Length: 249
Image (cartoon, rainbow, N blue to C red; front, side, top):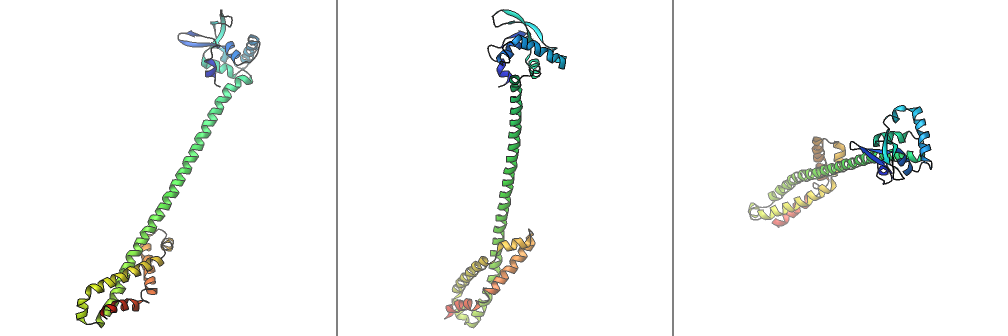
């Protein structure tokens, strides 16, 4: 409950002076149920306020207001702003509740703002983590592409070497006739070997060793691919040769 809500009640008496509302202090205290003997309570409260700070009571005006008996009576009245100051200085739990709720709502809004800020920070952290993961995924993809490219180049070199050796052993007439078949067989060999090489080369290890340096990544990719070709393709030279020689058989 707020003071503005109390002032809207029908039983709270007020009068207008130059289009400004002045509320009867006794009628407000009546609605707050501060005491049964309202006039005496307000008289005692006034004295206590005077002892603390006289300035608070300066803006109180004696104005004719419709009293509880429906007659026009001269009562202590104050504007909403002055009334708030007066009520704040009255030592009553029922009056303090009005302003405690204000503080509580202010605290709540402050805590909400802080929590929303924290949530925003969490969200930004989540977003940044997601972005970092995406970057890693993108770099992995890039490294995989690089591995494929280098594997194709290196495997092609080896297959060409073996194909040349096989062709040398065959007669030139057969070679001229079977050129297309040789090319097809060479392409099959390249595809198979490239797949094997790319499977065995670990892009994560390359990324860890390179530490974000693109030049290092390329060098490490070349090394890793050449190692795999030595292990797999060069050992299987006979397999490539046999496949090509079959054409001339």
